[in-house]
Image 1: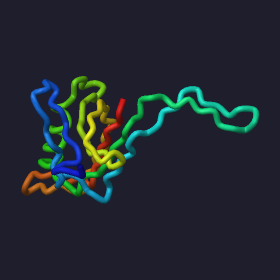
Image 2: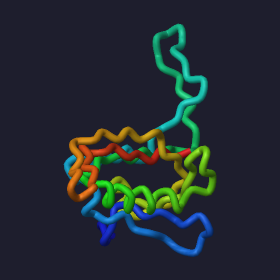
Image 3: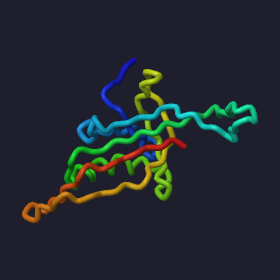
Length: 142
């Protein structure tokens, strides 16, 4: 299949459609995906020294990336796309569709968006523009 025109898109909370996160708002060199992370439950090391694993059927995916240096307008665009997908605003819960390179296919996941730190690089007082250092955004599957 290979990648289409997007890496991630967010389902609108009202399920009326999807909104693509523009590739221009993703610094490619920082994009990291850990697809299909195994989840263990009560795994242990036996008295023989062997690891006894109880791997659950559900695997989680984590996606994270930084924005390029951006201004307040670009940040509002990105956060607007992400936040319009929140089905639970307090938990920042949303549904995304992402490209999974291990399966060479797009997959859907219910995720949460952890806290976001914003660092101001400078402020253009003449133009009333805030410029930010790169901002880390992550999606962690439930």
